[in-house]
Length: 245
Image 1 (tube, rainbow, N blue to C red):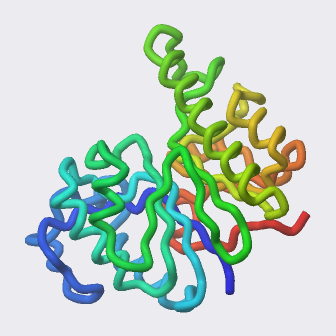
Image 2 (spheres, one colour):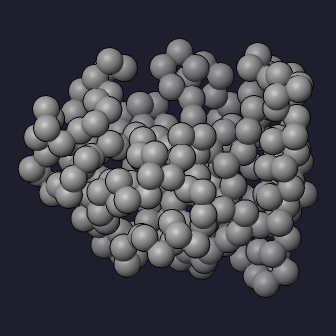
Image 3 (spheres, helix red, strand yellow):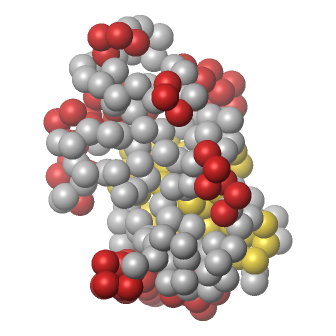
């Protein structure tokens, strides 16, 4: 059994579709071609089927669907469900349908799980998640707009980690964030402090696309293995979560 990660699928199916029967002109509400992601769902499907086995798990930290309402997001969830493996999902900044954690969970097919400010168990590991936010000192930070949201999200990560540590103190920990926990301009953050405090082994994150890939901080940082897993950064291919340190 292996644990993989891929984020920012940005799906937008407007009706039930199969893995191989998507009509580009009729079935997709928000094509990603303008970003160079031509029929990216086909690329995700082909790479996924090549790599992920039914007994594996795939972590998907945010921006899964463009849908504004949960009823429409279900089409995207069902398409993901048709791919092999267990899936663990968490929110991103474009997951507008995720106003109620309970409603999202109730809408998911079997073998798919939604976590946000809490944790789940995956292949003998504890996986925690929250969305994250812009970081103080980063180029997009706006003190008046961002401070309250940032502190709330840091608090949500603490809730998840404290609960995981209380109930499973002996298990390795993996964190799913949508936003990066550090950037070249923000070398520390409340998120990173918590990852270190609770001995998190690995953190997978997304959100960065195109030229923003240059802001990715990856590798072993103060004992935490950081991995950017945005679709376009990893060639639309689920990659193994690194725990080898």
